Amino acid sequence: MKVVILDTPTDVARYGADLFQQQLQRNPASVFGLATGSTPVQLYRELIERNRQGLLSFREVRTFNLDEYMDLPATHPQSYRHFMNSEFFDHIDIDPANTRVPPGDAADPIAACTDYERAIADAGGIDIQLLGIGRNGHIGFNEPTSCLTSRTRVKTLTRETIEDNARFFSAGEHQPHLSVTMGIGTIMEARLVLLLATGESKAAAVKAMVEGPVSAWCPASALQMHPAAVVLVDEAAASQLSNPGFFKHIEAENQALLARLGHCP
Ligand SMILES: N[C@@H]1[C@@H](O)[C@H](O)[C@@H](COP(=O)(O)O)O[C@@H]1O
Image 1: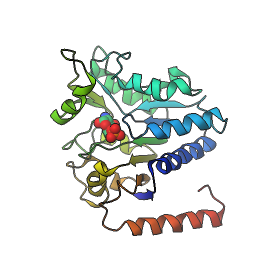
Image 2: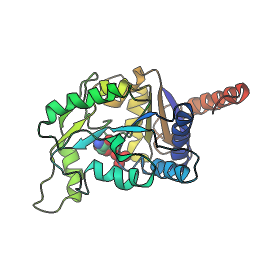
Image 3: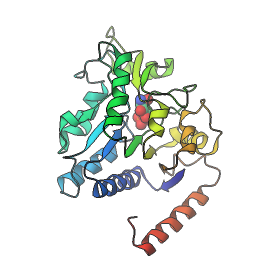
Image 4: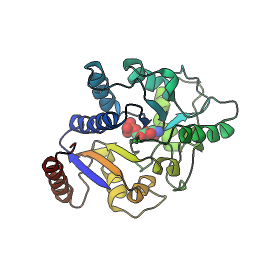
């Protein structure tokens, strides 16, 4: 996996936006897998600004989101559909009909998971799958002990996740205990996986993902087996890596080679 250590979360967002922009230059009708959470927000804002400046367009793009809560209406402020609309889709030139989230509100979510997988395949697969990472190494809602070849399915949220989320729901309000998430096998089929991690709270998960054994105990470690996994971290999220200088040296050499060959950085 390619680990790029950058100074700040803003540098992480800009580097990630460059990868999306380069992909759109190769194929304006690209298919993107998108993520929620706080980490990707700065990247979305960078892409919104570049779209506003006319540097890129999402007019022909199709998107599939990584995960969604079950039993939350799409209009609920805590639903990932609401998050994506308010943080990204409402601010770019994408056709809302081309944006999909996992079927958390389906009458039969189990059957709808198969449809979701088929829709991704029918779109030709995912060009860039954007990920965040949980403090325990989860990706999407694939929590520790998730099968490393799993597909889109219904998953139970951990007690920690439910407790972490409680602050977003009022007393007595239904709080989801289940989710629908792309599986790790689904994620691994993307042509490029782009994982962002920033802040000290992710340092242990980043270390386990990059240096630890490939293990269901750290679902993100599966990315060690992906041929095109790019991990963008700031100094804080990289702070527990054994040899950060090694990754910085590789990135400098890589950038110099691309510049010499006249390729996209
Ligand atoms: N289901 C989401 C994940 O997709 C996300 O990556 C993770 C980290 O979120 P944050 O980036 O806010 O730390 O939170 C949730 O569990």
